[in-house]
Structure formats: structure tokens, C-alpha cells
Length: 192
Ligand code: ITT
Picture 1 (cartoon, rainbow, N blue to C red):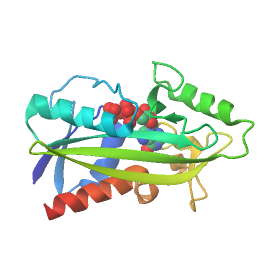
Picture 2: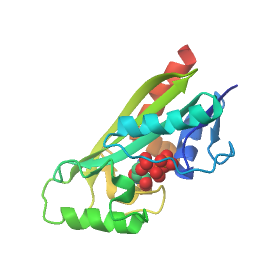
Picture 3: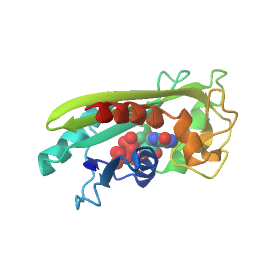
Picture 4: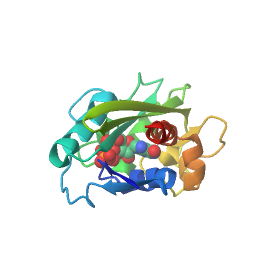
């Protein structure tokens, strides 16, 4: 089975991605590859940050790998928190605080539409390929559900009726930005 390093320290992302690629590819996280590093994400776009994660790991290992960057973009706040999603309320990356800040900034807004966007950068034998997945939806007025991670308790995908945090992992993957980007990555790798 082809081995790929997934340049992430986020165990939730790894779990979601493995549930799609399981049986077809062996996915190794940074920790499992013995790489103890928080890769900087200095850029203003998901595309550049995803590339940075993949390139850093490829340069270290020479093994084909991919990285992804994800942002939550709200229409009423001109795309906030966007590329700054992880550190919206501060460097501590505290998700209760991030959610509180988002709900507070949206409290007087009637437009609560938003989207999650994931960009995957794949480096295969040193050549880069990118894949994008978008999930349109809206932000709730209070957190709902205990599953998932990050902003999942406040995001309802269109046509779903409940938040990502109220869904099982396979159900989230059916709707999600990451599920869509992963599907493209998988189809690409299968044809390669
Ligand atoms: P990496 O190691 O892969 O960089 P990260 O947690 O830093 O992991 P990002 O840089 O992509 O991830 O930051 C985006 C933030 O948005 C992240 O901290 C998440 O908590 C949040 N996020 C990403 N995907 C999400 C999802 O599917 N549902 C809810 N929140 C999500």
C-alpha cells in the first residue's frame, strides 16, 4: 500500500482523513513519522499555508506527503476568521474562546451564512498538486453537540439541520469541506 505522510498535528483531521483513505493508502501523521514540529503558517492564504506544510515535510523526509489548511469564512464579517481560524481569539488556540468571539461578532448580524474551505497540497515525488473542498452552511446562535472539533458545534451545513458536532464521523465526511477535498485527492491518487 502506498505510504503518505500527512503533515498535521491535529489528531481529529487525521482521524477524518483516515476514515476516507483507509484500506487504500497508509497515512502517517507527523508524530508517527517522528517529526516533532509545529510547522509555521505565516501566509495570508490557505493555498500557501497548505503548500508550506507539505513542502516542509517533503524537504525533511523525501517521502510523498500532503498538508492541508482549513478556514471558516463568514459573509457578514468579510470572510473572518478565514485563514486565522486557529488563532482567532489569541495565540493559545483556545476553541471555546474562538467560538465565543465568533458568536459575539455575529450577534447583531442577520446574515449568518458561512463556508468551510479546505485546501490540500500534495507533494508526489516532488511535484505539487492542490485540491479544494468547500462546504456552505450557517453559524448557529449557540454551540450544539459534543462531537468533532474546532468550530463544529456552531456550523450547520446547508440541507443538514444539525451541526457538525451533532454528526457521526461518516455523516460529517459526507457534507464536509475536508471530505470533498479528500475525495478529489483519493480519485487523483487512484488514477496515478
Ligand atoms: P495542522 O497541524 O494541520 O495545521 P491545525 O489545527 O493548526 O492543524 P489549521 O491550521 O487548518 O489546523 O487551522 C484551522 C482551524 O480551524 C483549526 O484550529 C480548527 O480547529 C478549525 N477547523 C479546521 N477544520 C475544521 C473542521 O472540520 N471543523 C471545525 N473546525 C475546523
